[in-house]
Image (tube, rainbow, N blue to C red; front, side, top):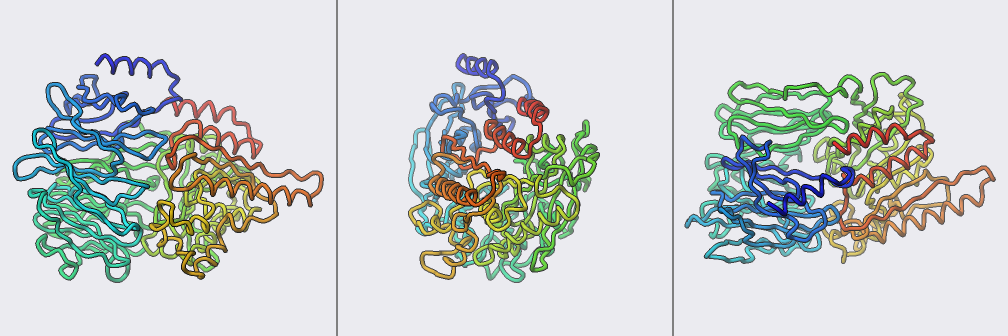
Length: 638
């Protein structure tokens, strides 16, 4: 406790912009486990918001720089708690196991752990299953016991380097599922929660292109899968003792162009969290009578945040948007109604608008967009515009709450999120239509979105900026090559810009795993020639470019720094060559490469990064940033 008080005192004397505590909270039995300062603590459930708590572990013992808890798992009888701890500048995690007693003590520490779960064996002993991560790959599964019968052994090894392993405990804790998957295919093994030392049972051997995920209830498996036509997700079920695919019965089918975001299983209900036509829905399926209740959620909502709830009577979750903090909602099964958190309505509801528009791409495909701007904005054509894009891996464009986005809208900016092909917003086919030799569809979609925004009176090219991170840098960089006149400035974070050379280097951690997304240019000329058509690095040429600010990370294992540096140098050379042929009044664009220390891929909450990017945008557009930084400080302190 003395050590904890010293840490608390030091944190309270620091300017709050310099640190942030990320609080992961887990309820188990009568306790709540969470991070307070630099400590793992627990308190009585009803006292979770008070200062009456017990310190279980001081994170400073690990001698890490600003460590935080990323995940907590409590053993069934609360004899042990395991916590995954990492730092902002690295993706590597350490799992510590704490023995819960009158004097809590660290029982074990495992490096490079990705996923982990507890089960209890026949002799009432707690068994921890965990995956070991090496070079961003999780191929090995271990199981360990503690106390007098201490053991630690490798349980499974996946030999195909393009697959990774993730552990998930079914909602009723009956089975531990071992999910072996890559971008397009999955395979699931069941580990009996009552007999964890028995060999696992294979549900269905991997079939290329077939994805499936498993939940359990009353001796039945509920399987979310894309098998069959159309190749979108549907819900199937089968008896737990006959799990193979030939026994799967269709239980529930989604509408076309629907993205399944998550599934939660309860005693008598199954809850599906969905996105359809760019709006959020919750479908509540009654398992006793197969009834379905579809709830359309508020139009401002853009994303779900799931709750680790164990209450069988209620299904809680949060809704958020890029400019609105999360708000709690609870579906109560007994009442058959959705209840929202009471309290003051966020003022952003009245001061801003959210619009759902569509742009027509050159092949006629309609591309959804989500747009935010102030309600009282006059002459939107003269307002600055910040466009967001991702479009890869079937992943949705991130639309979680970001304080800096809210500040920009308050300052008059228009935010536009373009849900282009290659992402997953409209289901699995939306991803398929923007990967491999269809990647240029995503570029066409992005161009159509920006032109549609301008055509409908949202800003103009001289006030238009674009932002992207990671694989979103492919489309952003490609647009800078193909249509630079649409943009004034671009910010990129850990961007993937040298697709061709990266995908030809099989020594990199993710190359083999990502062949399903980009193709294999080393063995197939078709893919090599196609990647050359859109790869940002390959298509740099002497021309006018928008100003570009790139944030990169020194030891990033996902997007190598070498490719980003090569791109930046080649771009600067092309700009210099172009400048030689222009008149004296030509203003060359600014190209800034900001290399941050550390090895994490994307540090969303870095105040230094946020400040640098916003400063760059305001300077490039010639806007006064005084008020925006004053407002931003308030949010960062909060």
